[in-house]
Image (cartoon, rainbow, N blue to C red; front, side, top):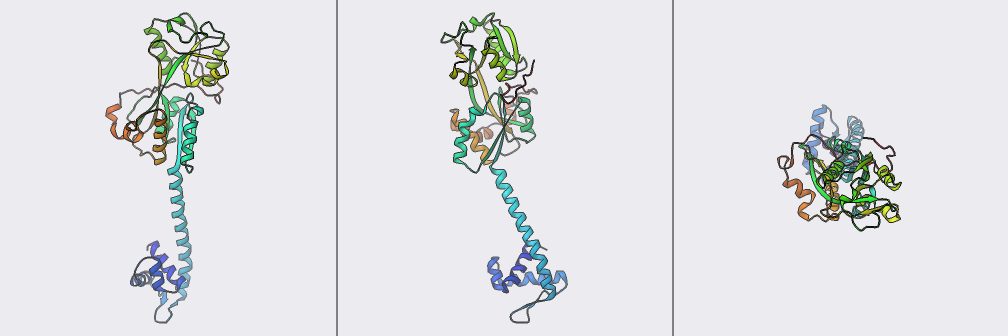
Length: 336
């Protein structure tokens, strides 16, 4: 017995007309008669006495229509709930990001996005890099933002942007007056470093080794705020992405010095599950982020996903290491 048949029967009784019920349900009048006949045959009772004009609803028919109204109403409510839930899910986007891609770095894009798509519900969560990968794989987040991305068979990696790294010193440091710095000038300096297991630290160490520079590791943390605070107090120098020190440079508590020669870059990327189709909201948000980073349309989320296969970009790595400086909300430094 179909819900639609129950609705048609309810409409016939409510409108006291087979023809009006047929018009309302976009069917023929003969079909409405067949619906009632089918219900009567199924129940083994007469619901409507059609021998009288106008027809009369039997006692069994009145009792049946009362129950049917509740069933039909509950089903219609359920349909609406499901559609509403689908609409909400389609416009909701949860983004998991490493700490060092702070909210201020994406706030302009987010404001522009929400202005254009006010129905969208975009939520950010800042996590340790390993957790970013984990929550995206577990479908607890739709999109992840990581640095030095690691490819896998489960996750699609989409390029976002590269951040230039600079030497960071306090304003009273001997190098602070220079416009740029040779890394060789850091030889023997006290250095406030990211933890040794982070990709950003490995990139810095590799550059020091290439240039035969030896620094003294004064402290090492995976907390962005602690690293900057230590540099501000004169505990050492550091190397950080320019976007991370914008506020401190503006107020004069830190100085960022470009590196002479080929600059160090920190790559940032977006990750999502390969086997899950991105919602329209997610695709539009990715495209906006990439457009702000100056990526051409051919590098957009949809084309990258379409042109890349697991075999194309899986490099067999099983470890995931990304930059994971803690944000101000994460007050606890994690020692190496």
